[in-house]
Each structure stands twice: as structure tokens, then as C-alpha cells.
Length: 575
Ligand SMILES: Cc1cc2nc3c(=O)[nH]c(=O)nc-3n(C[C@H](O)[C@H](O)[C@H](O)COP(=O)(O)OP(=O)(O)OC[C@H]3O[C@@H](n4cnc5c(N)ncnc54)[C@H](O)[C@@H]3O)c2cc1C
Image (cartoon, rainbow, N blue to C red; front, side, top):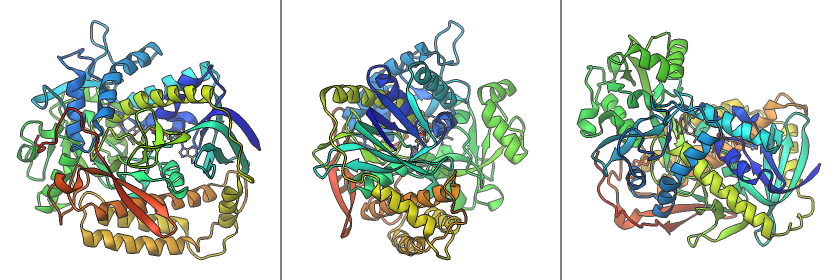
């Protein structure tokens, strides 16, 4: 089937829907989404969305910008961080006007709470900057934005999976190809502009907070089409995943006063971050937890520590952290009101992704040359506002600020440009991929390869990395890729074939893992979430630069681009 739109958005999370809101009613726009829109991972976000509203305490956008830059270990592009911190305020007000049910102060203004790395006066002490709706902030964003989309008659293609991106020989984006998962039919979407908002790829790791669907589809498809990815070595582990399960317990638990304790009952963050303590940025806290465990101070000598909320009022735990409390009661059979909670770091957020400028335009080189008609926003994109490590509640605000900017720029682009013709047989690559998987007669199982990938990435490419471990991971990837060519799936039908979907997704995960490992091996320093035990220092002289990785016929090629520094010169990072 063939469709023609002015603009096509792939992904119905916060980023995609925020962009759609800018285009709806003004041009002909469609949203294609693998999941039913409100099942997007944005709906799982719990803790909050950052903006220097200063409703509870003094705050300024420039303090927010500074925290973002420092939190990102100075790999942040500061022009983008400035846009983020300034426009966050407007974006929150816009959400409020659209009916977002924020928690409020007695006088009716939006309430705010503490989150890791957000400080007053350039690092003095934690500040209350995160706006929230109990611990269901993302759920409310998604519902609010979806309601706006329905009101504005955005056309949705639900449970349509993008398989390919269409680019002309001279590099202009002309649309996408998608599989209708329900029927197995191929659909070609011809458009003047395409926005990729396909979310993250936490499923490359074994222990993760990410939903099953977060397999890096958009990131991998861009990579396959020969466009570069940026800063893929930077992957964030959130300190407080439920032990063994990885299900997230929001940083809001610590924002509301929760503390971390080791097996001796010590508040160990006093040793690692004397000023911000448990509210230091995530890279610092995750490493500290592992350090305690390695030194034998995990609980009962095992590989976990406690998140302790027992000193907080029952009412705070049950109302402001209601969902988190439910998770602990349901999955662990413990009660956070009286029991400390076993936690371990969990793979959480991709700082790297598809390079873009501050208007969401996908760029291809160190000069930031844009691909005409192609945009990206949200977790799949790398603007880069998070640099080497993202601060809590800075992703939701990234979605709304840069989703909105991308949408606005797309509107202008579709008004000023004509449709480019499609290539001949635009869906041939997508068809070939699906036919291959449906017909392949091998012995290998998708689930086995995926589990081995996740296990190996956890062992050799997660919080602590070494050259040897990363090389071992590269070899493992060669083996897994080989075995992937010999997969077989049980379901050979066309209708709602989840076996097929999972096989395609495994291909994307392998691509993402390959990019992560190549970039991590090359970067011989430690910065933010990328920690090399064999190169434990940050090295600004050689490595204050973004990585670009491109797939070529001769293998992966790495190149670098400068970090944009405007207001804050890199300094040593202490908390
Ligand atoms: C448990 C959890 C809690 C979090 N809490 C917070 C928080 O409190 N504050 C904060 O700032 N951040 C938080 N984050 C991070 C934040 O929620 C995410 O980074 C953000 O929601 C990503 O939004 P997105 O719009 O980029 O993508 P998502 O919301 O992940 O949506 C991706 C969309 O892409 C679509 N898609 C993917 N692949 C395809 C394909 N091949 N074809 C078609 N469609 C496709 C999906 O259907 C989906 O609609 C949390 C994350 C998790 C996992």
C-alpha cells in the first residue's frame, strides 16, 4: 500500500506526540507506531520533568543549564543545553494548559521535588526543580499528548513497524517503509519530512528498566542506511533497579528522602559524594554501589544494596511514590514502609543516538550538515544535551522541548519544499528482510541469541569496561551475528507474527551493540557513564569530543566532532 503525507512521525512516545502537536491541523501528518500509542515507554516514566520554575525555592534556567553540562561530564553541547533549560519553562506551561494533572502547592502552583544532580547556585545543594504527577509523570504526559493528538485529528497507524528509511541517492529523505503487524502487509509512506522518535535500546542489556519493545529500531535503521550515530559508548545505568528484575524504582524515592545503605547499614554515599549524597548523578551513584559490592559490603556479601525509605512518613511513600510502592509489594513481597528494598543498577538510558541539531534535523558530519527532510527527537536522538550522562527528569523535558522544536521546523520545511520522487521499488529491502526471516531454515533460536547478547553486554560493556572485555564482546558479536544468519522461527504466518517482529528486533539490537562496543573500545578515558578501568581518568586533552560511528562496506568507521562550549569551561567533577 502507498500513502502520501506532508510529514510522517515514527513513534508515539512523548517526543513523537509533541512533534505531532505542532503539525496537526496545519499540514497533512501521520504517526506510525509499533505499539498502541499510550503503551510507549514514556508512559513508564515515573519521577518527574525538570524545569526551573522556582515555585518552591529560588531557581534559574542557567543553574539548570550548568547542572546539565556538569552532569554530562562536559560532553554536552552547551548551545543545546541552554535551549533545553530556557525552553523547559514554556514547555511545562504548555503541558499545563493542555490539562496535565501536576501535583500542586497549596496556592495552586505546580509542586516541584528534588532529583539527582539538580542543584542551586552551581552545585551548592540540591534544589526542587522536578515537576511531577505522583510517580506517574510519564503516564500523564502520554495521556495528555495523546488526547491533544486525537482532538487535533492526527492520523495514527497503530502497530505498524518501520522497517526502512527511504533516502535518494543524493541523500534526501523521502519517506519510510513499514510492516502492518496485524496483516503482514507492507506500506510505503511517501513524505516531505520524516521524524524518527523511536526511543531507546535498553534491551541490549540483561538487567534493564526498559520495556521489551526498546530495541533501537530507528537508531539501527539509520545506521544501516550509512548515516552516522553519535556517542554510542555512553549508556546510563540507573542506580535503583529492583534486584535481579531491573524494574525501575524512581530516583524520586531518593528525591523524597530515601537513602542507600550497604550490608553494614552504612549510608555509603557519604564517602563518594559528600555534598549531594544519594542525589549525586546516576553514573556516580551506580559506580559507588558496585564499588561497595566489590569491597564485600553488599547485603549479606551479595551483589545488591538497600534503598531505605523506612524513615519516611507512610503517607509520602503511599501517595507520592504510590506506583513504586506497588512494584515492591507485588514483585518482592516487601513493604517499603517497613522493609529496606534490595536494589542493583539497571540499564536505563541511551545518551547516544542519531545526531541532530537543536531543530531536530539529523546531521551527518562534524560540520553538522543536515539530511534534508530527516528529523529525530527523544531518546533515539543525540542533540547532545545529556553528554556522557543524563540527569534525572531531563529526558522528559528533552522530549517536549526538542519534540516541539523538531515539529515546528518540520512544519516550515514541508511548507517550503515539494515532495521528492520515491526510488523504484521502495519496499524491496524491507520485503527481502521479512521474506528471509520467514523462510530461513536454520537451527538457531532468536531468544537464545538475544539472551546471550544481553548477558555478554552486561558482563563486558556495562558500568565497568576494559579493553580486554570490550574486545571479547566484539568477538562475541561476530559469533552472534553469524548465528543470526542461521535463525529459524516457529510462526511462519503473516498475521500478528510476534516471532517475526522479535527476529527483526534482534537484528536491531545487534547493530546497536556493535556500535556501542566499537565506540567504547576506542574511547580510552573515563567520562560520565563510560568508565574504563584501564583508563580511569577523564582526558580532556584527547577526548573532549563526540564520537561518530558509521557503517561502511569496509566495517565500522569512527570519526569525531568538537563539543560546543559556550558558558562553562570543563572542570573536575565533584559532588
Ligand atoms: C521505567 C522508566 C522510568 C523513567 N522515568 C523518567 C522520569 O521520571 N523522568 C525522565 O525525564 N525520564 C524518565 N525515563 C526516561 C524517559 O521516559 C524516556 O527516555 C522517554 O520517555 C523516551 O521517549 P521517546 O518519545 O523518545 O520514546 P518512547 O516513549 O520509548 O516511544 C518510542 C515510540 O517509538 C515507537 N517505535 C519504536 N520502534 C518502532 C518501529 N520500528 N516502528 C514504528 N514505531 C516504533 C514505539 O511504538 C513508541 O511509540 C524513564 C524511563 C524508564 C524506562
